[in-house]
Image (cartoon, one colour):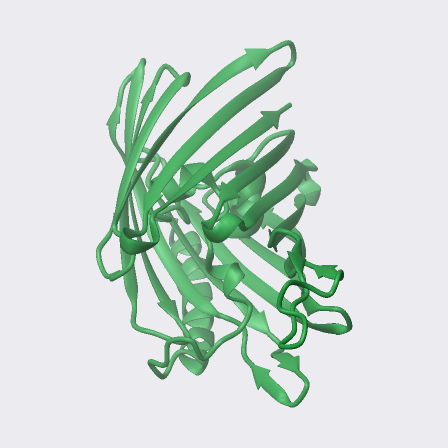
Length: 311
């Protein structure tokens, strides 16, 4: 136990120092690749992204790579987000645990506009050309158990952003994470520094990635044979703004029906979120379907749906 606490404390110190290096000012809009800040999971966003200590399966490649070490077998997930102005936000991930060798995952995050017409002052009705803008992140993740209670993980990402023909930018990023899981009511503590890497450069302008340091905890407030209630908390310090906090609650009936809700404590744009899901067995697979609703006040609402398979 003392060794586990020492390891988690050491990792927390390292991640905290990294976060301090990139989070010393409050300048909203000073970073690029903002699509990396949009939650990709229906389950996670239903909990208002208080998800770092709750995430499991392939979604851990995005939220907490060290959580991959706690999964068993193979997990595949495909999530879709109906974002604003007809923009499609999608996430695909697959992960497999190789036992003593550790767990490996692969993920793709994309944000794409509809096809648009090229218009100019001389041809306001369109030139006949079309284009679309798209952002992508491809990542490979690895996690390994250090002890019976502690795991470490990391992700290496490649980011590609295209705004128009021959007008694009790219960057590389690294995520580093740690998780501590206790034997008391499933109490879990997780932390991650995310999107730490090179800058995005368009022509002569260069902007940093939206790096953030996240830590959170979760516990089974109710842990009975047929139902469970998980309460999760998370805090985030982005490199471009003030700290944020989230809280989420998930009710699980017989590992079949799930109802979730969350609230963001320090966010002027969005506060309340909710959702649910079902898990069911299909042959040798465990399938799941999840949905979430997130309100964004004047902007409207975001609706996410996801499907997953565990085998």
